[in-house]
Every structure is written in C-alpha cells, then in structure tokens.
Amino acid sequence: MLREERLKAIIREINLHNKVLSADLSVALRVSEDTIRRDLRELAEEGLIVKVHGGAMNKAFHHPFSGQHEVYAQEAKRAIADKIIPVFKNNMSILTEGGTTIIEIAKKIPDHLHATFFCLSPQVALTLAQHEHLEVVTIGGRLMKNSNLHTGAGVINQLADIRVDLCVIGANAFSVKGGLTDSDWEVVQVIKAMIRSSQRAAVVTIAEKLNTVQRIKVCDLSLIHYLFTELPADSPLLGAYRNTQLTVI
Image (cartoon, rainbow, N blue to C red; front, side):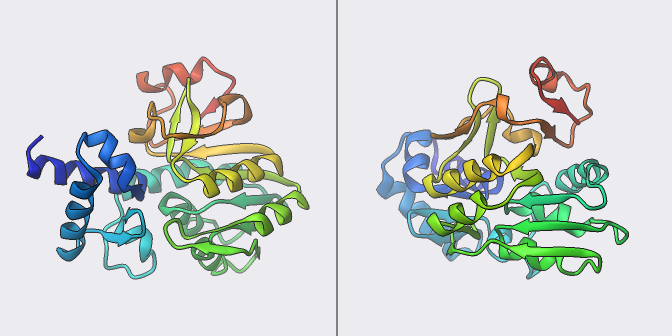
C-alpha cells in the first residue's frame, strides 16, 4: 500500500470509529507500529486528527461542542436520531453511552418529552440538559479522554444499582456472527454493565459499521433488542439482521 493510500485508510478508520489504536492499525494495514505512529503524528500536525496515547481520535469526537470540525456521516446520524426518537415515551428511564450519534439523538429530543436520562458521557448530559422537561442524571467516574466516557469500577457499581427501561449504545462494530464488539477493554466493561441494568438495549450505528468486528466482544445479538441505522428497514444489507430476534428500524 502506498503511503498516500495508507493515510487515507487511517483517516477513514478514525472517522468511522471515532478512535483507533495504533496496534490495531498496524495489524489492519500490515505495517509496523512505528510507521503508524509516524503517520498519526503527521496527520495530527496537519490538523486532521487528534493524537492520543496509544492511538488517535476524530477531531469532532474530541471537541464535540466546538462546531469547528465536521462530524463524519452527520446526516446519516441525524437520520438515525429521527428513527429512535419515537421510541422514547413519557416517564421512561433511558441510559445512554457516548459518541457523535448519541449526541445527534440528544439534540433532537422533542421539548414535550418528560423522561429521565442517565448519562455516561458529560457531553451527552450537557446536550440533554438543554431540554426543559428532561431529568438528567450523570453516572460519574474516571473520564477516559480517548472515549469521552466515564469508566471504571465506580461506574459499574453505580450501574448495578439502577434499572432502566432502555439503554442506547453507539456501536463501534456490529455483526450477526460477532455481535457487538469494541476495541477498548474498559469501555466494553461499562457497556456490559449498561446492558445488565436495562430491560431493553438498542444499538445505533451508521451502516458502514455493520458486518465489522473489533477485537473485544461486548455481547451476542441475543442481548440486543433494537438496531437503528440510516438505511430503510427493508434494505438488503439488513437482511441477515432481520432474520434474528432484532427489531430492525
């Protein structure tokens, strides 16, 4: 692979997954980690990404409120938000993860909705707090800067003490065989705890993340109740998912 092609591939992975690890890019692109680190340093110096310990982040994910950075596939994420909003009913309790898709959902909450949101992401909590009739509860802990999510044993213990109607999870990777997967061990533990604390679980993801697998498993499809993408529910790409117990919207 030529250097220019490699840099484009790195940017696409960062845009798609919001954050990537140097080790994973090294394996995927079949080059040394030293080469990947040099590439990331160069992309960061050009202002295209944010370099963090062990990898890199999408600039819009790292600075979600600045408005200066383009959100990858933002229209698709807004379409997903439009689809999931009708699922939220008055007096529901909803647990949310973080990420740019979840933030688009938080922006579109209708003013008339009366509900309680439990948030693991400070950015999502602040966005939801702009809606007058929502009660917003933050689940606090150590903030992981490469995921903008509260993690750790304290968060997992707090989640064990609540029971919500629905949790909304932004997928890093999702497939029929692999289920829900991610690249970060601590984030995986928190998402597992979210699912345990919820009566139902919804995955929200742009279609590009379907049929992909990351290295750490969160759960099988059997623990997920809803799948929301920007695609029409009858899209051929979603055929395999419709053949499971999932409600595909």
